[in-house]
Image (cartoon, rainbow, N blue to C red; front, side, top):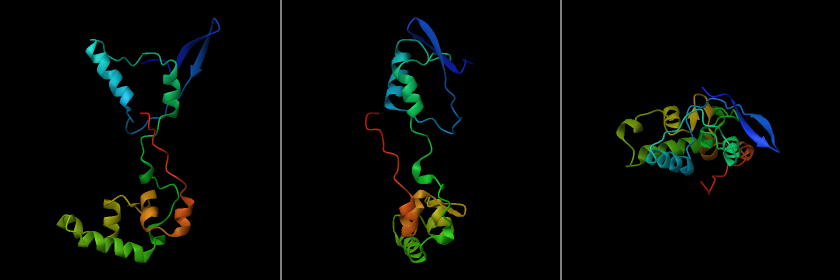
Length: 152
């Protein structure tokens, strides 16, 4: 396993930069990373875990988008019971009335539908749930989703 730092030459001296990465459940791959891996395979080499990180790669790794989608976060702590009841009822009725929904999904209860479509996790509304069935005061607390990087 490689050490958690990179050696960078700086004015004829060496500077050690320590970077700590928290474990995540999935890797957010960019087009540049996929392209680099494809080029490395064509050249007959393989990527090693001990390859030093230099230059713009350090900045890219530090600012790379987290792998957890914004829509699935529950950081506001809005309970499902605080959702707008009329909106929740009409949304669930519209899902059940749709001909594009499977019969097994139509049979689910309202709370099961909210979890199935990612509007709730347990007793909490996700950001998507707050947007669709939450009250105006909770929607105002959301803030904005992180902007997608158009250069990747």
